[in-house]
Amino acid sequence: MKTKLTPEIAYLVGLWKHRKSKEGLGITGGLKLAEVFMAEAVRQGLLDANRIMATGRESYFYHTAYYSLFEKTVEEQLVRFAIKNEYSANFIAGLFDSTGLLDGKTPVVEHADRTDDLMLLRLGFRSELRAGRLRVVKGAQKFMEFIKPNLKLEIRKKENKIPAKENEMP
Image (cartoon, rainbow, N blue to C red; front, side, top):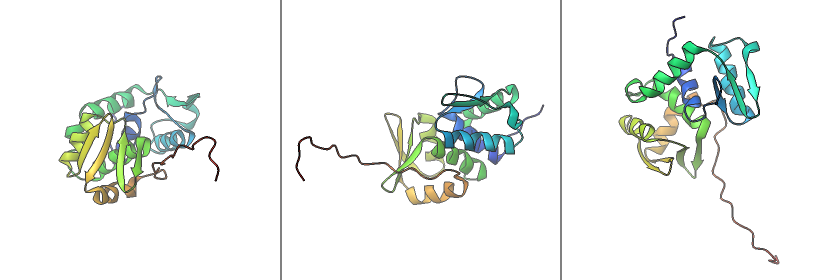
């Protein structure tokens, strides 16, 4: 079977990159994330709906050809997503849907790596990578405009938790 990267599959690769399941081709995460991943995989013809397996927080399926395509795409990320187009927009939207959030107005991708940082820089978005957190520091609005049409999940926002002091009277 010949597999080919499409913009929709690029989105799936982005979702999968930092949330890989231990078994097969799938993701670890919440129910909404798993639903989006599996629904999109079925829609793109990667599998039949009756081949989906789930254990705990993992949802996955087995498909050697697509697993190889996903792995190769991640290995060649800097080459495949070097220009602003629908492929790179979908891939980054997948990354953002899986581990991204807004910290105020600043987009942040958690569990990011140096390759993600370089890819964004090549696409014209200046970012900072610290302790696995990639913050878009210049061009944040343009970044969100670039990926927003391809996002499939609600954008998470960082919660500023203020620790409550014990024994404090209102």
